Image 1 (cartoon, one colour):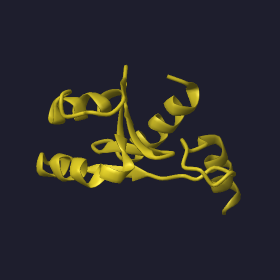
Image 2 (cartoon, rainbow, N blue to C red):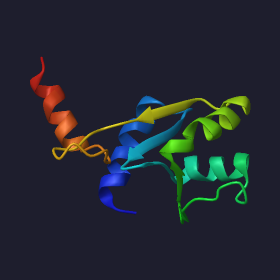
Image 3 (cartoon, rainbow, N blue to C red):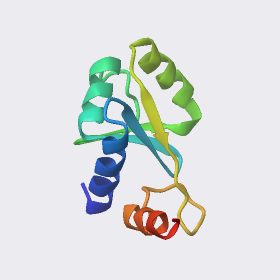
Image 4 (spheres, one colour):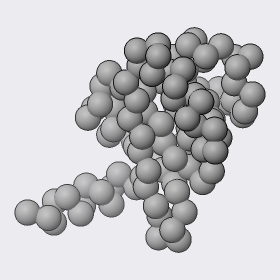
Length: 106
């Protein structure tokens, strides 16, 4: 897992510790680390027909409502993180940039 994902996951997990974080990346929602494990546990690996990598679960954005419904029925709180980069694409948030903007926004 790259450093950008690690930083973003830690940044948002500190804000929403009990929630499953779903990061919008291009046309997917991705969950990482413990959140990916929780999703696998709740949905079952056979239900997850889309890409799975170690410590990552990827859910297609065009069918996210189906997954959200099941996860919500299981009592999970979800937090969606949608960030657009300079090219206008959904991407992992640049936490350093967010922190700098926050510091300048007194």
